[in-house]
Amino acid sequence: MSALEKSMHLSRLPSRPPLPGSGGSPSGAKMRMGPGRKRDFSPVPWSQYFESMEDVEVENETGKDTFRVYKSGSEGPVLLLLHGGGHSALSWAVFTAAIISRVQCRIVALDLRSHGETKVKNSEDLSAETMAKDVGNVVEAMYGDLPPPIMLIGHSMGGAIAVHTASSNLVPSLLGLCMIDVVEGTAMDALNSMQNFLRGRPKTFKSLENAIEWSVKSGQIRNLESARVSMVGQVKQCEGVTSPEGSKSIVEGIIEEEEEDEEGSESISKRKKEDDMETKKDHPYTWRIELAKTEKYWDGWFRGLSNLFLSCPIPKLLLLAGVDRLDKDLTIGQMQGKFQMQVLPQCGHAVHEDAPDKVAEAVATFLIRHRFAEPIGGFQCVFPGC
View 1: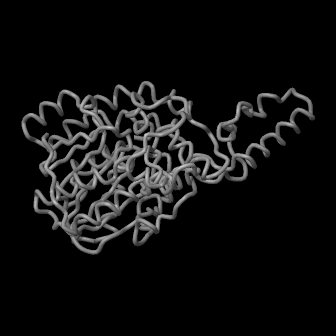
View 2: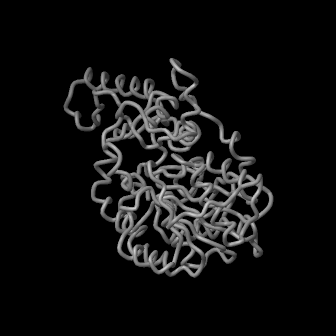
């Protein structure tokens, strides 16, 4: 859901960041460092939340693709986690620590193609079909012909890809399916305003700390603890020569394309080059993926998603940030008991980052209820009312 991910929370978040303050969750509140102190926006390494990292090689017609995965746990079913558009596997870091402490399971958080540290030959192909095949290929590369029981859990775009993967039977040992804050009707409606949202974001950042601070204060991630590890997977250092679009800074002065001033004097050209270099020097971090360029795939991710989700013949869980997100097909399906639903209020679109403990509690309860996994640490199931 490249832009979809952002589109889902447009109704709740401002289109032009930053805003003062943030609505952090209890997890985020822990990072405040005490009264009168500045909040710590420094990045945190993945190793504080995951046990190991692996680059999984997948052979295909165009050559070798390498998919980055982060793992934790050694027993129980595998929870294969798929992030939203523009995010990375690191968005699941705090959730991973929370779920591992509640239920016996294994975590595999995957960087989808063109995201995070995954490297593919055809990075521009972000079709639902291709990304679903990627998921199946990674499972096969990791586990061969006898994969362990697997539950697919996806947020936003990742939720859509999880459904496409499940409906195409690309994971033979699939136990269950969970979508987080992605509903066809809401997603399709939000696509129209997605480009405006993306244009309103900063193009570059002065530092990782600056990017983390923006993500929290803008409301993209409402939990500082998660933002400190998650944003590392969303931005990267600018490369030697960035495109004119990529060299726009947060500051008011926007660098224009040098080609547009071919008739300008040599001094103007020289000044622009110096300004461009200064911009990169002052704002050396930019987004890892240009979500605006993935627009042609947005419709394919979400159209028909509700019926695909309902047709998957496995236990299903839908976690939403608000009941207003439910569309007609899912409303009928939920009333017919075709899936379990839980609403987690006071969250932004990145539900699993804003409220990792609540999401972990819901997923753990789902796993135990269906006897897919065993509780640990005295975890008590909390069954939702809906």
